[in-house]
Image (cartoon, rainbow, N blue to C red; front, side):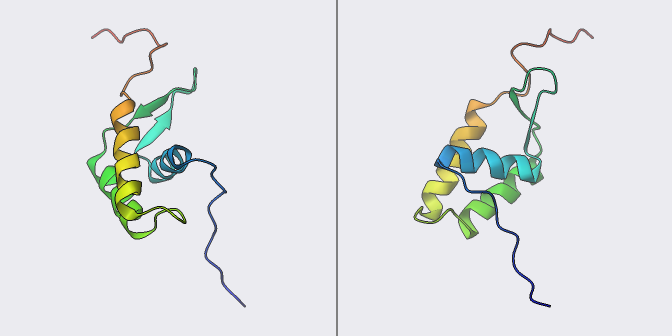
Length: 89
């Protein structure tokens, strides 16, 4: 039986690619109630995504540009949802 590598969905922008890879690796997730992306602050997941960006960037994108976009997305995402009330305690 012929085995093929599972293809990632087509992404239209470099930012979209970075968000998708971060979600797949578990480095970010969505707020269940509001849909905002939240950083999980998992250093292992972050390093895994940076390795993926270096080793398998999107077609036509240099590894350095892919890593820079992943870092930019991570820098733009907080660990809390801006619409959720703050947790007390």
